Image 1: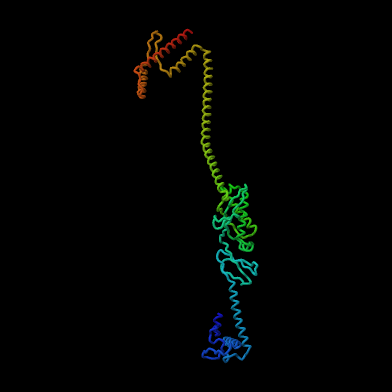
Image 2 (image 1 turned 60 degrees about the vertical axis):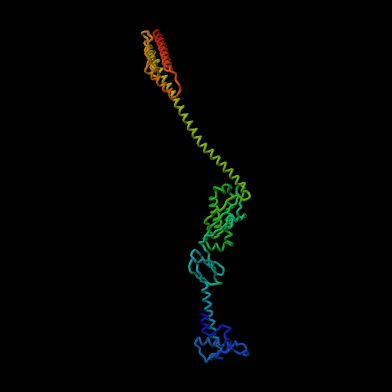
Length: 423
């Protein structure tokens, strides 16, 4: 707009213009001034400028200043200055507009003091130096590394080495992810916000590790240590009103210091061997002990059953004997014969029986030849299956032995019957 106005006034701000410094109503042929003409007249330039302003605002004159004289020149200059001031004021006011993206917040200050916060979208504030603003990304997940930078190989020993409760040194590297929940507190309650988060994380980790054993931190307690550090960090940051919210604490590397890594590995292997031997012994014990207990219980049950059986048999025999005694007292002969017959019945039930004619006084025996021949055939078959040569007289010898055994039994039975008749 200002350039168009200058163009309408006919002012050429170019030192290469051949008419620079010449009067408006001077030479019309565009000749360059001679070398002896001298420098341009500044008063004449000012008058020409005011004349052009007057013509632009409707004041016409005969090619020069109007009859108003110096007053007209001053009015034109004041109007021009007013236009310039208005344009500058509009540009200054437009500089107070700003755009806040989604997930961001703007903190507006008035002369350095907090005024208000602005959300996402188009916003306006008083331009500098009255007000200023600073945009903070509250949705971005920020990351702080403790004990390393970029990679776990790039260690920071002063941050990573920590002392446990059992007086051991451990090397811990972990990362903290956080977001911003209060941009005002984040900007004005922290001098160096990221360093504050790192220092709080290191402090919380040292406190938790200092209350734990080395084996617990190295093995089964990693997740618990991370959770405890998360909770403690949030408590500390809320206490100092830092405006940060801890999202996660992740353990990157937990190990002994490099100087004792070899000895620690040997001790770890020994502990694993001991645990393996313990597990094997426990497995063997779990196999043998239940089996032994089962055998013991079975033997106890068998012994209990045998004891019950013997006790019941003895009780029954005693009761039967008492009954026999009572019957014997009533009829001795009948009871004695009955006892004899029952005894013989029990004996002959499981033995081979041979009938002998004892009343006629002859020695003729009635042998069970069919059973003897069957027994001899079975013996010969067993001998043939074992491929051992059997003498041809083996069956005959067994028959003779059986006959002798029967004769001895008959003689004993005859003697016992005679004794019984004599009584």
